[in-house]
Amino acid sequence: MNEKSEIKREAMSDQLPDRLSVDPNSPYYNAEVLSRDVGVRFKGIEKTNVEEYCVSEGWVRVTAGNAKDRHGNPLTIKVHGPVEPYFKDKAS
Image (cartoon, rainbow, N blue to C red; front, side, top):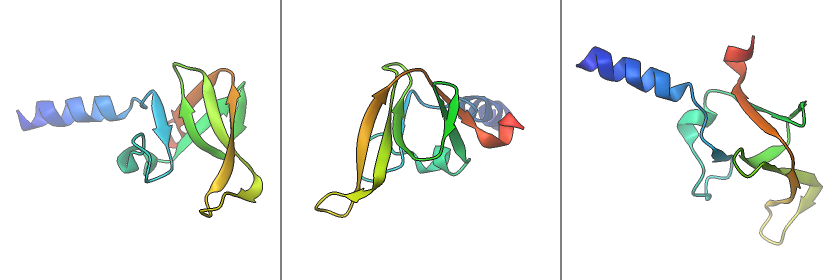
């Protein structure tokens, strides 16, 4: 049964969650998934400044330059459009 559970875990780990955040305080933060180097294409263009995404709702939160809020967190803007997350190691 260990082999089956390992195979099942590997198959499930190849799927990205519908919503993912890089902020450790977010309920959508997943360190295990983020450790695999996730990339995001938004409207067909690869984005490197994505803080959070949601595939089903079709939006990403991107940082707004170097601006910070009063707690020192980066300010973000929610932008709507098609979102395509992927694992960078699988893309090559």
